[in-house]
Image (tube, rainbow, N blue to C red; front, side):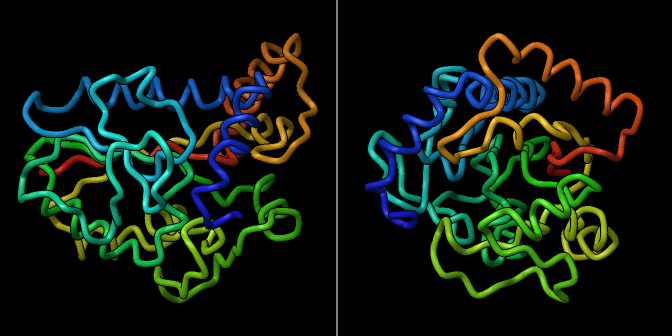
Length: 243
């Protein structure tokens, strides 16, 4: 079921029934919107790995896509072989998708080809931090290997295949390699956020430890922790511009 579009209803139900999780998604989609406002006006704004999300409710001009033919997505798209002409995209955005791409080098090469000058990539993904590292290593169901020598991995499927450390590996550990391999792309920010809230909300599991009345307190705690310890984030906003 995990790697099948038949899981759409279950995933969407979890997002809708867990107010703290839905709020997390809303925050990410508003970041999409802000990034899009900084892009040129010409070109397509494409979300990769849209799945059962609701980004289009917040950013109506988005073209939604997924590797799986989920109900309601506009296109079936492989991030490593984008079906777009050179310099035809103004935004590529994704939420918790980057670490599922088995060849992120191929994706970044395609992004460099397809984005217009001034176009952007906006990624929300997992960060390898003091809180997230033990969770990703011991408690999370997805593969996690921050010591992997390469960015590529053998994928078992669109959702089951992963390396949860990929964003940190590419944009922190191997930042110099990223800059050398993709001179047309410039990393603008790697901003950590959400130390605890996503985990306490249970992610896409059935349970949540944050009731609706506690969302504000959980958000305030996350904000306080990040202000005091900026490197404590479990997730990260990555924004990249095409030169």
